Length: 308
Image (cartoon, rainbow, N blue to C red):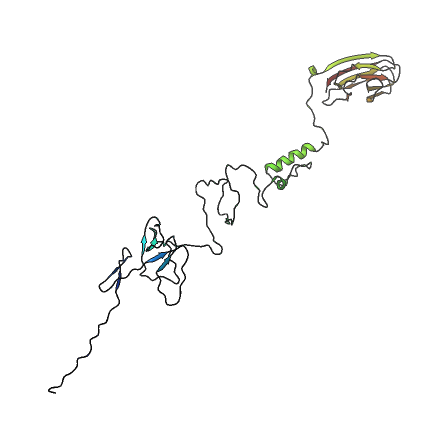
């Protein structure tokens, strides 16, 4: 079409959004051509307030913990350091990890926390005044408690003197309980129970005994052994004779309790041989006497011992 002019179409320039690249090593963003971008977080003591449609920087507390909701994507970057970094008001920081890859975050207790504690080495616990929110510990294995001073309350059912029992007067029944405590109770019981008979004592030698001979035709009391302070007189062997019928009484002192009686229906003699048990014993500090019921000649040969 000759002579016809065509108006060109208007030219449009489209401004592209800036492209943001993040350094995978440091986590710091850097700008590409066409614009720039800064992923900064503002550290504040208190969480800021937000309103619909407003733009706000990331928000961190003064320990560097990012205030977030939801979850992070796999492309989130954190910097691993041996020690936790320090933070200041209004500074921007990448996420922080320890050298094991654990993200440093703020954790607040909610509900019950179970803490497993395994003893290793020596645990030194100083002076404890009051324990609030104590941790419940469940025994596992053997617990060794050493160098304890003061008073310890035993748990229910623990072995105490009360549960072991105390010695009683009842002899040990021999029921098979061979513990030291039961044996001790048995010995105590045997010692506390009166014996029904005394054991046989060894025979005394002749050098241990004293000898006295007495002869009289009177029917009055006569002393055989004088009183000895705090001592008794015990007759272990004797021989007696009578010229006619009579009764001899050995008494505890003059006119005292009759200790032993020998009857002669007619003239005769008796020999009482040595025995481990005394035939008669006087009271302490009392003389031994003998008296004939008839005025006939009687003789007494006595082996005796004075002792407590």
